[in-house]
Image 1 (cartoon, rainbow, N blue to C red):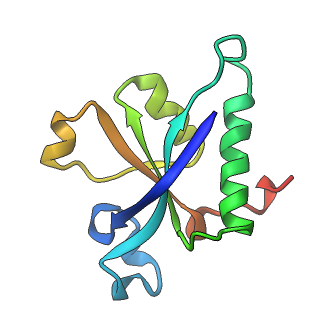
Image 2: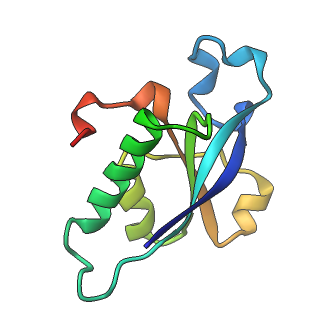
Length: 121
């Protein structure tokens, strides 16, 4: 199961945005947040979650009706969760005082910069 919601990301919080052309005009960039990502325990450990993330990237790259440029997720501060998203191309947002106290790390995937033509089915 995967659920999405609208989100935005402050340009100054992400490490790579200052190098992207056209970003300096905006303070916030539109994003779609992966609000819930769950796999039935019988299928955990399979590649289904990777496939769901690949499908999500493909949908927002080819049929992006939300106009978002970024995918975000709040990954639980567990090594396996952060590593899973990092392995799928997500990067952590710069640490803030709020995030140091929170139980999650906000992570992002820049659809424009990191798009991989090989992810399409």
